[in-house]
Length: 284
Ligand code: NAP
Image (tube, rainbow, N blue to C red; front, side, top):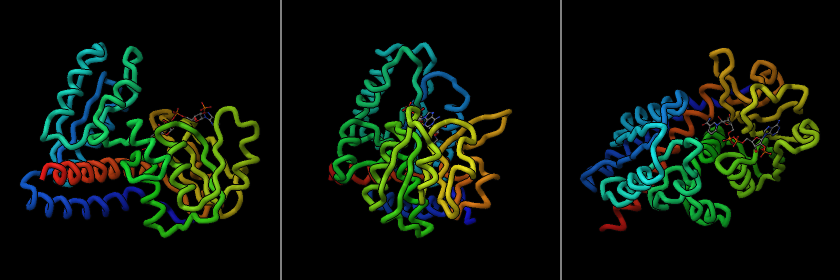
């Protein structure tokens, strides 16, 4: 089994990005800037925001973090996002999800300017993705594609089974894999016989949020498994795939942690850099 080492790949790619930022800084006289917005103090969300802030610093990006209390009103969040949209020094805005229940996620995702949408969740950017037009790709699916490409995995003609159909992971990764010529099956909570589908897969993407749901009796020999899931079990992080079980049958496998997670952070930085270049080219 070959480990799809997202930690190592993201570190290499971040170094390359750092060099590109150095060059761009010399041309445009300022680094890219990412604004991170977090509402509430959910520990996992806080650690994701810290991770993105740390990574942006490492590649030479500027960032600022807006930590708002759990009881933030819609008006306050609207005002902050509107100001960040108008702020000429900000290239990318990342609203950490989930938001507290009283705030409408769709409203705020779409309030972020589509030109500063580092996560690629804005309805216009999602529409472009589904129409295969150039656009910002959601960070996790983009990170998965970068990982696959780095290991020279050609998915053309493969049968890819995506477990999970969320707008941020399952659905867009299905689109991107389909664009590369894979034949796609998307499974979800209403799928009657999950094993029937996973057994036929050449490549499986697990994006469910159920600890170690995928086991070796559910796959064929040589399968490629991309595990997006992040679950905390007894204080430990585990994926949606049972790593120990699958490592003897899979040809390629992502670990959790150290697989898709760091690739997602890298993609956020890459998206911010692309938005920065577009932003500055528009102004010049
Ligand atoms: P989500 O919005 O909760 O979607 C979960 C999906 O899984 C839904 O489509 C759901 O089906 C499906 N599902 C639930 N139970 C199932 C079952 N027993 N069998 C088959 N499908 C089932 O989650 P998400 O935002 O896509 O995230 C999925 C996981 O990835 C979570 O663990 C999350 O923490 C993790 N994640 C990791 C990263 C990273 O960077 N590594 C990034 C994003 C998310 P229905 O649509 O029918 O409800």
